[in-house]
Image 1 (cartoon, rainbow, N blue to C red):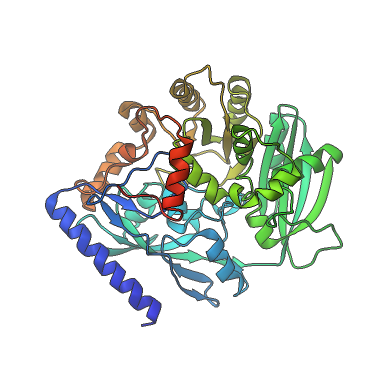
Image 2: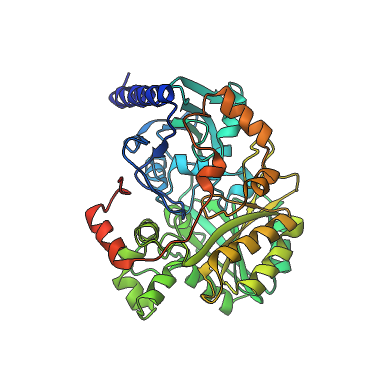
Length: 469
């Protein structure tokens, strides 16, 4: 047993013993990771948490069999940094580097390779899970398969993932990225569909307005092919979405190569484009110089921290909602008219078959995730806006990605998800009396008032971990 395996075994034993005590007391607890990429308000109380924040080790990588054994709090940037040393990379890499392995599994994360490989959990081979009664079991597609698929997108409501076996693929030095201009929502979706049927590695899109967007098609390459090389991780680099907008306004098609890490985390600086809102709040000029000067503050990890510590989650509409390809254009048209939010992100997903809580669970030939992130009209009620979007989502057969706010009634929620199947899993695997159910964990109740001074004080006190009261 290696030193890392010994450390993991000791932590596993501690977590198991904690859950045995909670199970005996019939006391419900929350799983504390130390950080989060959810936009929901997070509250943790001493005596009501299982602390797994120490589970952030990469235990091993098998170059020959192409897999990694990692703990759930390993973030994407650390995982990619390690696997690239072996010439490997996860098939699906969440594009914000602070998102963790466990967060990707529990949160239904899909990215620009998901049309090909599915969501992040579809690339996982096995989970080690501690059940509500403290038992430790292994799950895979062959062993305890009902829990393996049920765990995906369950937000820690069925057990505690403590170790994950992830499939890896061969990496290359660059991504050759082709930008294709589109002039409407329908053209964007048809371009995505056409390219998803081809042998390509990455697809996503940005709609800058109703009449201007870009669909980006990427392929792994080992040479620059004599094309321009662009980077996006340095302070002096342009934010990716601004770079894409500039190119597509000038060219109907543009090609370049991007170093693999710069491509995978291209949306980190600026948090896609949500960082613009921070400049707006503080009345700061938004230009390349100010983006350079304040670069550390506008990386995705810090932006998530600010949302939580300043209680700003109801100041900005931040949702990912997935739809069958056939109805997604109608939804985008409604969002553009109703919310007036642009840009919008488009990410095609391979439909799920067994993961019933997944936003991609669908009988469609292709699912499209729509990322809607931006300020709303402050004359309108935030919760009412969300409720209206939930109604339209139901109308067009969509599903929210539940990292964000959901305001469904229990009856509405369980018309979307299979309650009988879910409750059967909770009973079978001893989750009922220990873990809050997925509806309780993801529903937001009440309103929250923004407090910037309080938030900044919290960041100073606890810059690296979410506070526990």
